[in-house]
Length: 277
Picture 1 (spheres, rainbow, N blue to C red):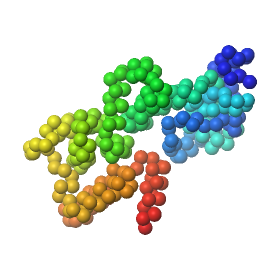
Picture 2: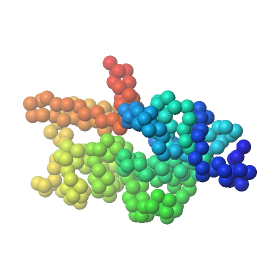
Picture 3: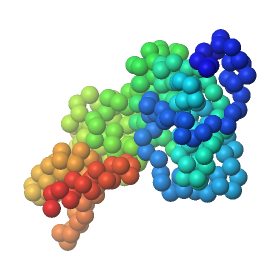
Picture 4: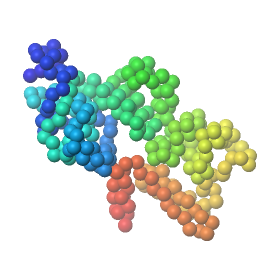
């Protein structure tokens, strides 16, 4: 029973590829990734059926014939969907803190992360793994200034953070908005960006000139909206905890936009809508 790197025969297992029973592997409780696209998993499962698991997962040993995922949960889930009973794996020696660090660092390396997800992972590495920004810089191969810029995004109003995760605004927009301390002003600027499709440069100018009324500063998107719409939008946002927006045409018609950031979030919103009917 190998539990540490100094145990007998550890060198014969640790760092080598072994075939493990899928049922002997538990998921990582520290996994920062909570949503897995079902369609993408099915595609990966089909590939695994034909070619097998090309890249082994990484696990740690937690007891006799019992393991815990360190990385590779998509491959693990897809292998189960493909009907496999075993999977190739590397075995690592790691305590809980090291497991959390490895999971977070691996998560940061994903290409499909939005800026807020990256910022949250950086913040967890600092808070829970107790890394300094300099140590974190070494771990992830990023400049300290880059890490600091991401973490600052967490000071944005939650509605703006949600909008960034949903792709309504970019990190560049967020960096411009974060220079404003008043969250009500942040939200005002955010609404103007979304309504006017402002570029980052235009947003920087808006922030710089905020409070003035030159012709090149776009008006608040809901300034022309009737009071009943303004009040409803505010109530919608509070009720659904989402960056809900209303687009109103000149003919009186319009649409309500309800953004969601994942399949789970969509299900949450759907339940709220059904409960209100």
